Length: 153
Image (cartoon, rainbow, N blue to C red; front, side):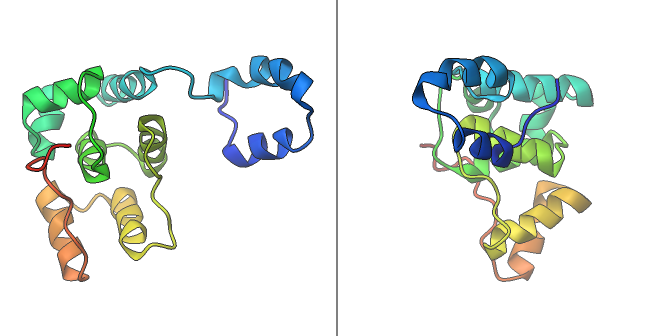
């Protein structure tokens, strides 16, 4: 089933009454975030599709393996969006997949009106190289590099 975008859902919600919520939910539950494993399942599906192991992602993302596994299993949480962005980039996710991953983790999606986010969106589209290359580009434009997992929240 094709995922409905948020704008479509928002517009639909503006036209229904409270007593119609059950019907709305039944018709749209495939595209709603309804369980705590949405992030983990989504990322694992993309890794399988891209033929990349979790271990390889953590290595490319420069995230300690043990910490990465705990994040993907849901055993540990982070408040650092940069950690999730590192995982997305290392997993070779598209911009759209990255936005979906951030959403499923409960973090703000990249927003084109924020200069750093706008540059990151271009980076996800163009894939200029490793995380080191990404950080060099961010620094080149006077922006903060993607934080590493040194400060785990």
